[in-house]
Length: 428
Image (cartoon, rainbow, N blue to C red; front, side, top):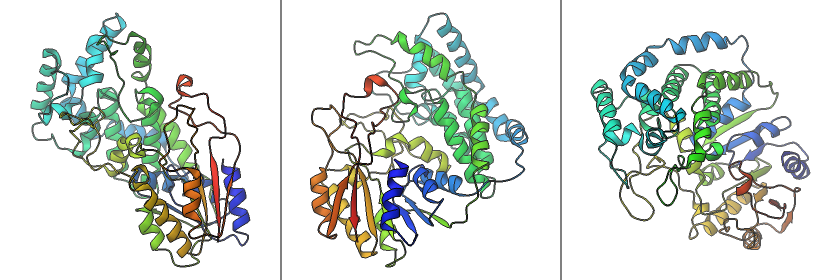
């Protein structure tokens, strides 16, 4: 859609004024627009700020990728973690061998209940307790890390090891993150962006996202044998291999003659801070269903915050227990995803953009009731009506034929018409 978005921005912005990418996410749109315009990139998520800084900042010369890898692999943080978590690393190797021989249960238990965070915090899983074998292994780790059980440098192995990654992969992620946070900008952001790319490549979930770990059991409680191959493949990936590939990408980004600024803040705050004329066009791609985007990126947020968050322990159905996905308890909840708040969220956006004397291009996905897709909280017509409270000239256009990917699985892609996106053009 990039060319279509830029086409309308060009039309609304003949003098090549600054453009605001309001919900900038991974920074792809901002990077594309930066070829011609000064850009203000805004998102409330910290991982987004890192991605944008990495994409928009020009390349860095003379980076020794092999030297960086060697330094991280020999770092004190990695050595300590490899020693502290040796009991669970050894046990996981046994589980891998069992999986190769057709015994699924030990490895599947790790995927289902392998978060050391839960054990260390004395949190219970909703369904059942750990096996005696896994509990013994966790007890051994607990003794090893008695004075380091809140270390920032082992967050990934404690929280997400087992569930999303092997414990070894998680230790390597912790080591790379620790090294990245010791670096100055722009290398720091480029390393963290590269690590996010690697983490997304190797994570052992359906569709390579972080909304939840694999569901290893059928409804009748039997184990899903068809997952074994995927588990072996994903859990055999080397973090450093993918990290190096992504770091090469980010340190070789082209230089630009245009200015940019990346702001990590709420959209209303960012818009209210704009003076009339600061930007000529705002491009906005807000959420449009009840599903909060942050559930797909909570692990990336933790990586970029480099903290040890408290984890949600309540399920939506009210039952107690550890949240299966290990969600941060401060995970962002967008008003655009809450039915009672969505109308005001859109109204505020239109009002503040209008007050900034800017035109607005809103990207929105319409809803076909026959598609099986998730209903939208507001219809296109309702959004247009809100826009017309502030803008006299509002039109809805199609940027072309697109189909939204649903976790890279064809069986999750409904039979829909391919008009999967609309642009709502609001001319000042």
